[in-house]
Image (tube, rainbow, N blue to C red):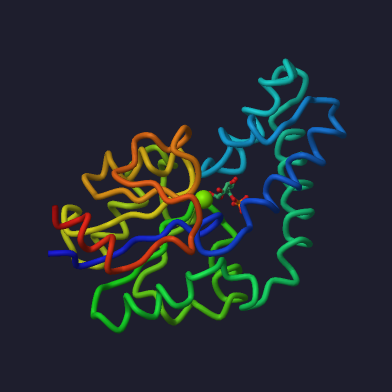
Length: 219
Ligand code: G6P
Ligand code: MG
């Protein structure tokens, strides 16, 4: 039986994936590195420092900066990102997600967040959803980022639920891979092309219903 649903945060519960995109895009522009929506797909679900490294490698500039300079660049991106999330309110919850989360909760299924972001608690608090989750696991508590399954396995462990009784929901290719490697059922939000490893992909959050995913999970 389905006992828990573990949610990615950025791009699943709220559209902060767009803010990460904007903040990285601005930094890339300053560094004269080409940046596109397509390239940005590779950054989804990936930690701050790993994202920066991917951007620098993409621009052929990875060896131009020292570790200290790289930290400074990552901080600049984060300061920009924090300004963008400063005005987040419950109105920024993606379509259908609030209803879905409350429905899951009312059914007695446990809920967790599994996020690669160090800003996760701040974001979920601004959305007014923090109290709906039994467990929040973020980049501050784990060693290995997605696609490693650690963040999802840690969430299941803290919920005291076996991975096979969990569904994970993700908008990132690295995240879907992490869910599958954790031995869970994976729901993808986005395009079938990017999220081909998911057990089921929905184009947008408003297509996700508890009734349907419970059925898919059971089959
Ligand atoms: C999320 C996003 C990534 C972001 C990562 C780190 O997983 O999908 O785009 O790079 O978190 O976020 P942070 O807020 O710690 O910089
Ligand atoms: Mg995401």
